[in-house]
Length: 120
Image 1: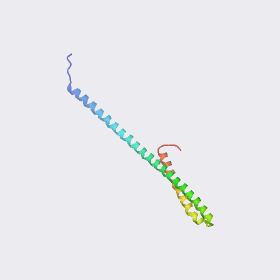
Image 2: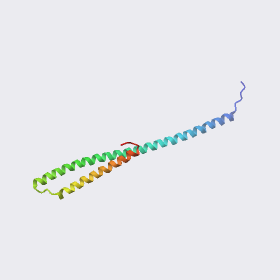
Image 3: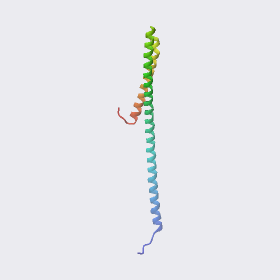
């Protein structure tokens, strides 16, 4: 076998293969970067939803404590014959504020859930 090896032809083929491989790797790198970025955004959304859920739970505990305080105060004032609406208004306002905060947190969760493509 008397085949002549054409070094320039082999070099051109190897160079072409390296260029194509480089292009494929660049594309793979871009796709990987996009996937990581989307994952990061999802993680941020889920973190915000989790934080809002914890805040709702804390507000619920605070609300229950306030209910107990109201009950104790009503009982004490009633026992002393000093029950007036003015003294109870501050408790009612605080309860209303807590309820509004819970409502707002639930809206945040709902919006984040909708952005993720979830169904209610």
